[in-house]
Structures are given as structure tokens and as C-alpha cells.
Image (cartoon, rainbow, N blue to C red; front, side, top):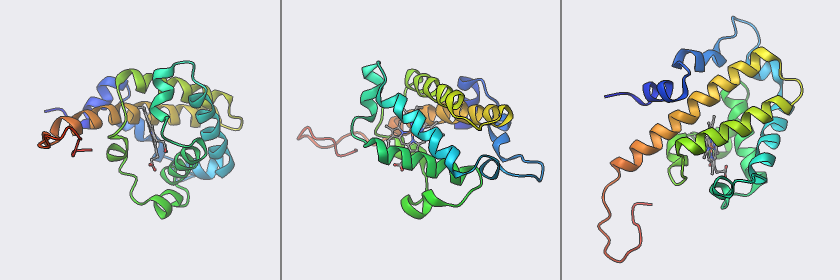
Length: 172
Ligand code: HEM
């Protein structure tokens, strides 16, 4: 059986080792040290400004229950932590557990492509991100987006069937 990472690599077209090039800094500055806190705040703000204004209602509505300001903070704190900066996200939210945290959302192939479209535009319009860092980030995002598609899919398939006859959904 294919692992989630193998599926992510196949679906995204990004090999797993390439996705984790974000961690290769050749002994120099990591991506957090290179780009700094403000750049990650700007990137996440830029990204969610696009998501919450998306003309595609089906995509915008996936975020309908989340407040934009909180979504921005969740994302930039996660990115800062993942790129080698202070563990802001885990201090406030605990383990990232991204598959579990995305389990309630429609993380389909189409949603991954739309997410990545907005992230590509956000990366292109955030100043102070050099080309090498941009490529590393987009490879990480592509692979992770499809890792989440694969993870949420298999999580929902493995869920226990509903035993509750009342019609409410005890599995959620
Ligand atoms: C949160 C959707 C991909 C990282 C969320 C939320 C939604 C969502 C609806 C809730 C917003 C909030 O309250 O924070 C999606 C969809 C994706 C996707 C449809 C398409 C594949 C990604 C990727 C990453 C990511 C690629 C990381 C590289 C996060 C993080 C949170 C989050 C860190 C905050 C979780 C929390 O603390 O509750 N996502 N996401 N997501 N997403 Fe995604």
C-alpha cells in the first residue's frame, strides 16, 4: 500500500526529499532566520486576504466558520515554527496534527489546487522573499497540500460507521 508521503509525491509532482529542502540550509541561516517574522506575517495575511475574497464561493465557504485574523495567526505561527523559528504555534495550539485539524474540511484535489493558486500569488506579491526560498516554500506547500488530501481521505475512510440512528453524526 502506498504511504501518505508516496501519494503526496505522486499527486503533487514534488518528491518528498524536495519538499523537505526547506530544512537544508547547508549550515547557514534557516528559512526563518533568512526571511524573518514580518515576512511570514505578510505572507499569511496576503494569502488569507485572497482566500476570503475568492470569487469561487465553493472554496471561500470552506473557511466560512473561521475568523480571518485567527486563520492568519494560526498559519504564520505554524510556518515560523516549521521553518526553524520559535515554537509559537505549539505554545498556543499544541501539536500541529495537520491531518486531524483538516479532517472536518473538504480537502479535495480541487481545493488543494485552489489553495496553492492563492499561495503562489501570495508568495509572488510578498516582498523580501528571494527566489531560492520561494521555490523551497512552494515545493513544501505543494507536497503538504496533497499530503493533507491523502491524509484526510484515508482518515475519513477509516472512520467507524455511524451507529447513531438519531441522524446526528457521532463521528464528527
Ligand atoms: C487551518 C483549509 C492546506 C496549514 C485551515 C483551516 C481551513 C483549512 C478551512 C481553518 C482556518 C483556521 O481557523 O485556522 C485548507 C485547505 C487546504 C489546506 C482546503 C488545501 C489543501 C494547508 C497546507 C498547510 C496548512 C498546505 C501547511 C503547509 C494549516 C494550519 C492551520 C490550517 C497550520 C491552522 C490549524 C489550527 O490551528 O486549527 N486550513 N488547508 N493548510 N491550515 Fe489548512
